[in-house]
Image (tube, rainbow, N blue to C red):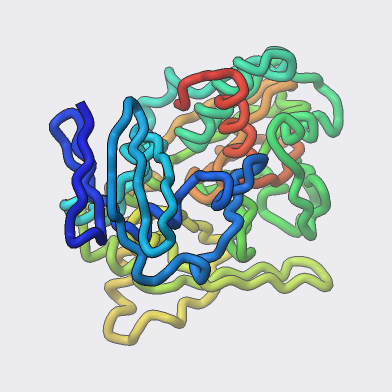
Length: 380
């Protein structure tokens, strides 16, 4: 049974259901009304601004009927119905202080044990089956990483992967870039050297939030790909040394790329980025693109480098990585604000050719959410 009670002289409503009570301010309820006078029926966007809602808005009545609660607001005198389940799902009445470095409920952190549970799908199936596509995109959103197999072995096939959920983000590297051995390359990714786990393009603001790497040839010895969950590494750092976590989230690092004519990219962001309430929202780690760190006070610089080294040691720990080798027609995708990727060194014998491109997580999440609604599926 659900009940509603007016509290604080009409400035709030207490909704009780299943033994739990949730409080909502009158101004919050009025701002989040879904009636046709407040929200556009087609797209749900607000038709009024906060300035149109009286500053002294209060509740004069609140009655529950079935799964709805009807609220009357003064001084407007309007009656508005709210879905009880929607109110429960959007409650902000949380008595406990949020945990520093936590992740949102729709994210699952992982370590090397994910190897047997990688979000994996067949390219042909996700291209033709919307349920399969929704499942795969949901896994990528939750774990920040996924693989596709069975794709065409042809140049430009990676664009068909991006088309599954969004749009290619073009950069100074072009719509896509080639990853294979070069003489005098402009970027170390184009050599046979092993690469430490890193996020791409930290010198951009904003960074491309999705990276796709698609395999066309891979007969060289070595060259295995590795992925590491940066959020799991940040939380491990927090648990092992709150001081080191605080240093890397409090002070900005600097990143820079100027490896070609006409390009000079710079950014200033922390290696561990938190929202104002302490939620983890991004990790940036790329030793090759790190510029001089100048935003840390003198008396904190040595401690900062200790924290920087500590995070690097966690990232380099084999227990944190998932390793795999791509075959032609296979690709992997990462959330570049969270998951670091790396490559083991490979020999000059044989051939190794990958194509890469960037896209953005907002398109991926939007496509997944729209599919969940369209198909009536449970969100992952």
